[in-house]
Structures are given as structure tokens and as C-alpha cells.
Image (cartoon, rainbow, N blue to C red; front, side, top):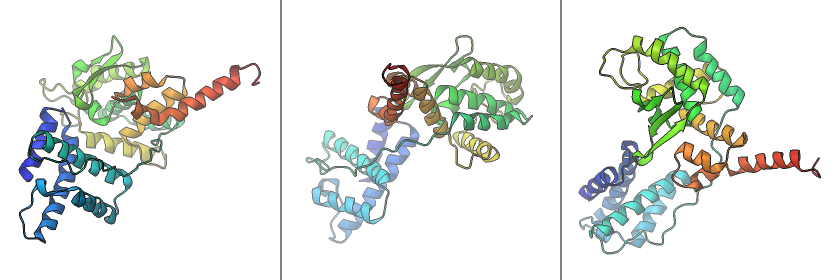
Length: 302
């Protein structure tokens, strides 16, 4: 059974192009499923097998998740992992019937992700500007680029020198499924990156073979954890009263773009969302903008 899980995880990486983080999440969910199957079959004294995992046992697993008190979003993720796994087993001929067929995932609401205001963004960016360290100069460029592009944390720390065109004013990044996208960046972010490249990065650099754009104090690629910690520290020193993560800036980017009049399709492309439905979580923002525009411009609305 565990061998089948490993085969599936390898399929996700090789065939589907999933990230290591996504693979790890699937691995945790499927190992939990395997533990459940083994515990249940141990009571009957038979060897556990995916072929014996029927619809009834699948419903038992869903009940087990509910009894453990998982949040709907977590439970839905686990069910999605199980469904994908059994679709794989069916396609590989390991099972003849899919026990997850016609089983619905837990319903999950889609609250608007947390964002900070434009004023709070300024407060956040003011923090490294108060400091004189090399890391603070790097962080200025890093925060400007993160907010200018709406990139994910993993995309930002994966950037290499050749991925930023300061003359053309754009950045190239590789998102989920290794899909490439080009994102325009505004002049203020371009200027911050230019200063970092000419004045700060050379002083952080320890080896001329290092290609990473953003370096830590050891002269190697800054990690995602390092980025998270920096944002947390700056949010605290700014007195924002809330946890700010790279995802917060990503959502703030989308929120401020749409509130400023950007259309949903453009924001979808900038964020790297495969489906417009993912971006539609921000739909009410475009509705609010449309209402303001209507009230401002319609002759009978004044």
C-alpha cells in the first residue's frame, strides 16, 4: 500500500509538475489514510489492500475526519487528495472500482483573504528604510517587488539574476506546475531593485557562481522561512497589530489592483491563477468599484 502512495507521489512530481510542498501535503494526507485502513483491517485479521477499500469504508474515513475535528478546509483538502489517489489507482489498474466516486467533499466557504490597506503597506515598507544594514536594503527591494508583482513567496525566493529585467521593467517567474509568466513592475520597484543589484547584493555575495537574486547574510539564496520571518518582524515593528505574510501582500496586491479599476482577467494573469474561478474570490471588489463608478458618472445617480 505504501508503495502505491510513493508511485502516486512520484507521478505528481514527474507527470503533473507539482511542487515539493504540494507533494508533502499529499503525502501526509495519504499516509493518514493508509494508517486508517490498516487500523480498520487489523480488527478483521486480513491483509490491508486498496482493492478492499470500498465506498462504505470511504464514508467511514470521512466520518473519522469529522470526529477528529478538522476544519472544513483541511477536511476538503484531505478528501481531494484521496480522490486524486484513487483516480490514479484506477488508471493504473491497481483497483477496478473507485470508492470515492460520487462522494462529495466537505463544503467550504470562500472568505476573502486578509489584506492590509495601502496605508499599512506604506507603514510596513517604512520599517527597513529606517535601518542601515545590508539586509534592510535587500528587504526594501524584496518588499517592493513582492507587492509590485503579487508573486507567491516560493516564486520570489526562487528568482535568479536573469529573471528580472530592470530595463524592460518586468520580472519572469515560474508558478505552480512550473508555468512561466512575465509580470510588469512599476518604476519604484525597478529603482529599488537597481539599487539592490548595484550597491547591496555585491556586498552580500560570497561566491560568483551564486545565481539567486535575493541573498541572505551567508551569501546564499534567501529561504521562504527567512522571508516570512522578515515580514513578521516588520509588521510587528510597524505596529500593524496583525500577522503579515507574503500571502498577505499577494492578496493586498490583488485587492488594491481591483479596487483601482483593474479587470478580473488581468489580475488572474498577474497572479498566475489557472482558472478564473480562483480569482473570482475578489468579485465583490469589482462590484464595489462598478457601483462607485456608476454613482459618480450616471447623470440620474447624482
